[in-house]
Image 1 (cartoon, protein in one colour):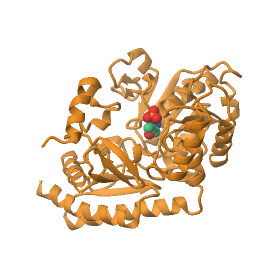
Image 2 (cartoon, rainbow, N blue to C red; image 1 turned 90 degrees about the vertical axis):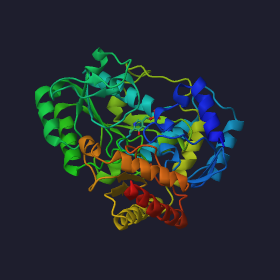
Image 3 (tube, rainbow, N blue to C red; image 1 turned 60 degrees about the vertical axis):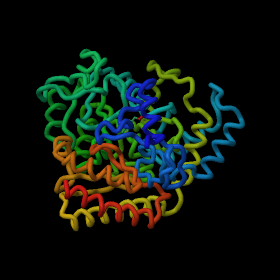
Length: 429
Ligand SMILES: *Cc1c(COP(=O)(O)O)cnc(C)c1O
C-alpha cells in the first residue's frame, strides 16, 4: 500500500527541488522516504499516516519546550491579533534586546533579523566594517548558514585560501575565507603569525552541532580568544545552535569566554523565524543608520516571531530548567551507550546541555577528520530501526540531536528500549 508520506514525497519532488525546502530533510544520507508531519505536541509528533514519533530533532533546536507549548501558542495568537507586521519599531523588540543583553551580557547591543544565516552574514560584514579588513577564518565542519563566503572549504594547503564548497559561489568570494581544523591551536597560531593583521574576524561554533556534536578543548578556545585580542580580529561566537541550548547564557557562559560578537537563532524564535547578532557597542555602532555598514530587513523584529521567542526565553529561565534538561539528555546518552555495549556494537555518545552526539566509532571525535571516520552504514541501520520504532533522529550520521523540556522519563526509557533492538539490527548487519 502506498503511504501518504510516499504520495506527498513523489508529488513534492515534481514541484520542489528534491521535494524539500532544506536539503537534509530529504533523507538522502540515510535513504528512504522523508516523514511528512502534520502535528506535534510536547515531545511527540504525528505524521500524515497517523504514526506517532518521539522527536529528537526539535526542528533542529528551536523547540526546546517541545511542540505547541500552550504559553507560546497563546502569545503568538495574542500578538497576531494586533497585526502580523508593522515594518516599524515596537516595544517587543526593546524587550527582546534587553532580555538578550541580560542573559548574554557580552551582547551590549543587539540587532534582530529573521534567520541564523542573516545573523552570521551581517555579523561578518559588521566585523569587516569595524576592522577595515577582508579575510575571515572559519573551521572545517562548522556551519554558519548558507551565505556565499561561508560555503567554503579549505584549499589544498594551510596557507592557501578557501575554495567554494557549493556551486554558484565565486572563487573570488571564497578566496577571502580561510578554513582551519577545529581544536587545532597550532594551526590557528601559525596563520595569525603569518597574516594576523589582515584578519577581520574568526567565526566559530563554540560547541559544534553541525558535524554531529564536537566539544571544544578549553585550551583551543582560550588560545583563540587571546590571538583575536592580540591581532585586533573580531571573535564571533556563532551560538545560533548553542544559544539557550547548552546553558542559559550559551557556550560563552559554559566555558567563561567572552566573544566580541555573538549570533543567535533557533531557540530565540521558539519555532518562528528570528535571528539576532550583537556584541561590543563600539563594533555594533558601525551599523546603519549610526555607522556605515548597511544591514536591513522588512520583517526584522517581527512582532509575532518576537512574541514566540520572548515567551520561550521567559520559560527557559525557570529554576533548574537547564539542570533538568542536561540530566535528561545525559540519562539518554548513558542508556544508549549501555545498550550498544550489551549488543557489542562500537559506539560512543556525549551531550552538552540539551544537545547530543551519537557516533558509530570507539570514542567521541574532536575534529571533522575524526568525525568522518564513523561507520555510516551502521548509523543508517540504527536510524531506520529507530524510525520504525517511532523514534525520530536526525536523518544523517553527521547531525547533532536535541532533547526538549517536554521529554519525560518514560520517553527516555522507551527510546533506550528501542535502541536495544536497533543495535541488534546494526550488529546483524
Ligand atoms: C542553523 C545554524 C545556522 C543557520 O541558521 P538558519 O536559521 O538555518 O539560517 C547558522 N549557524 C549555526 C551554528 C547553525 O546551527
